Structure formats: C-alpha cells, structure tokens
Image (cartoon, rainbow, N blue to C red; front, side, top):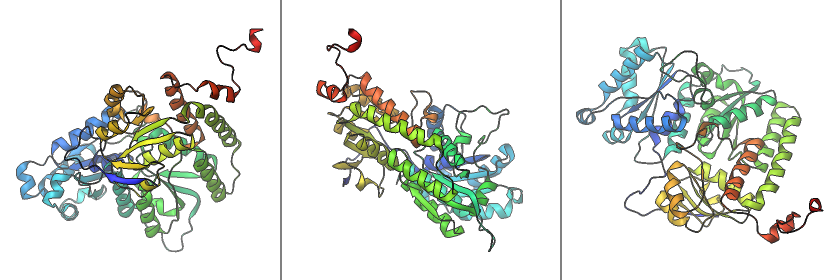
Length: 456
C-alpha cells in the first residue's frame, strides 16, 4: 500500500496538473452541437483553447463570459446573459455547458439563479439545454472537473422513464473517464457491439474529437452523443463506468433512473479485460466472440515478449490518478517497478498503487524522483526533464503536442494493451535497454557471438 503525501513547496514549478474548468469543458465537447462556456476572464478560456488545439489539432469550440475587473466585483449576471444569448443566436447549439472559474467562484456568483432568470426573460432559449457545473480552478484538478461535469449532465438531462417501463436489454450506458482517448472509445465501441449491445457513451469524444473532417463547417462540436440520446439513457439495462472518477456519475444515474452500474477501475491489462469479457457475455447472453479469444492470445504473447525488456526496469510516472493507476498496474504486472509516482489530486485509488509513495506534486518533483529511473511516463511537458535526465519519455495523458495521433493512442482492450506493451518495449530497446546475457539464455535465444544452426 502506497503512502500518499502532498508537496509542501510554496509554489508549483513546471505544473503537472491542469484545472477543473477545462476538464469540465472537455466533457461538454463529447456532446453533439455543444458549446462550452467558461464563466471567467478571457485568459482562462484562451489557455484551455490553446491546450486543446495543440493536443487534438482540431478546431475547438469554446466561449467566455469575458469578466472584467468591474464585472467581477459587481457580479456576472449580465455577462452570463449576454454570452448565452449571443451563442444561441450565432451558433445555434443543442447545449451550452457553463463552467465556473476561480475568479467567479471567489466572488460567489449564483449561476444557477442567473440561469433561472435568463430562462424567464428569454423564451427563445427553451430548446437549448443549459447545464452549469461548479469547477473552481483553485482546488482539485482536470479529472475532477470532468467527473463533476458528467455527473451534472446526468442529474440535469437524463429523464426518469415512466413507471412500469421495461429496460432495453441490449442498450447500455458507458461513462468513460477523461484518461481515455477517442481511440480508446472506438475500441470499446467495437467490443460492445461485437456482443450485440448498443452502447451510448457520455461523453463521446470519439464522435467529436477523433480527427474526422465534416462535410460542412459548424461552430459547435461536430459529433458525439446528442442531448436526446442523453435524455433516454434511463432506459438502458446497465451502466458501465470506466475509472474511479466516474463513480459519482454512475451513482447519480442509478439513483435517478434505477439503472444498475458496474465500475471497471482500469481496462489495460489481461485480467481487467477478462473481467470485461465475462461481464459482457453474461449480460448479453452471448459467448465471447472468437476474435477476442485470438486477441487475448496475442496479448499473452506480447506480455511474454515484452517482459524481457520491461521487467526489472524502474519507471517514473506523472499523471492524473486514474491514468496513473492504470499504467502503473499494467507495468507492475509486466515486472517493472514504479519507483516514482506523482499525481495531481486525491483519489481512493492512490493508496492501492504498487509504490512506496504517491506524491501529489508537479513535474519538478517527478524529475527529482526519476533521477535513477529507466523510463519516464507523463505528458509532453515532461520532455525537458527527460532530456536533462537522459531518460526516455513515453508520452501519455494531456497535452501531447509534439507528436501526431494523440487522439488515437489506444491502451484499452486486448489490442490496445498489446500495442501499448510493444510501444513501451520498443522505446526501451531503442534506448539500449536490452536483456542481459543470462536473460537471453533463459529465453533460449542465441547470442550474437554464439553459433547458430543457420551458420552451419
């Protein structure tokens, strides 16, 4: 069991964490025709906009209430009203997701009250969903903002089916954590559909930020789950939550609609995917398709091949709690040691990470702890530490702005885990981390200096 500690430094150096508002804004981007609106200064929105554009390399819809110093002191009702009315006229969204920031939370703006007044005075907004989530950026982190936004969507949008209405057996809700990429969601959708199930993802970034080019320009999100589909999620037979961060949303769904849920803390690795396949087979009444049996065999072989290059290595990981738990658990199963673990916010999972200590800190802390490690895993802002330490960096999380295809990086399922093992193993090989002589002999592989049958 890991000891969880918090950095006592008086300032953050080279931040690892990102703020709650942009986590919530990204969650709203998983809905079709959405416009995230940050209630705060222009700079708050500009920061998030640049971060998402660099990571996804796509046009990102985000707006701001553009709070000035005077508006912040006097209250932001007029700014919120003007922003919502202008967005409704110009972009015609299906939903506007309002996320608070530190400056408006400090003032104490009653945004829920603002929205009631705006609804009364602007009946033209009746067909637009308005969802407000409190996400002050002076506390918690990116993962928390995503979690709160999804839970609020469930509370505000999902309708309770009429009494006596039967659940749709083949319909399932899927609540993915922010640590899953659009590529991960595509992989999971293929898995669920192979069992004859109809999955509805909330949020669904695979439809909005997967890099496809739409036929026509739209100022809002270009895909994802629709508001009407979210409304109907109460008719599903099961909810599958992925990541501890999604527990509040799953519990809200169950409490409101009676839809039971199962939570998978991670889906990278052999055991978690075996559990997923068993669960899907049970609820669908279908056997596990042959293609997944084959993929499982490929993963086992990949683990066998990869552990000679990954096993025994010391790894330093800096990531949001769910991603940290996911990757450290997989690498522990591959024989690696999580020698340094740094994260952004508290989570019940942290104590269960196989490491001596998990530090809630920044990238300076990670660099200090990673001095004698063989591999560094974090987002692209860890590249300077990697260069200084001469330790290879495997980029995971957000943002990844110096490599292509971040949105399609896949780690879930048998295939995703297999490819992740190969990618990390190849990085170790490329940086000179070959098994020693005795390990090669144990593998039954000839050394370069030894004669082989082909040599004769």
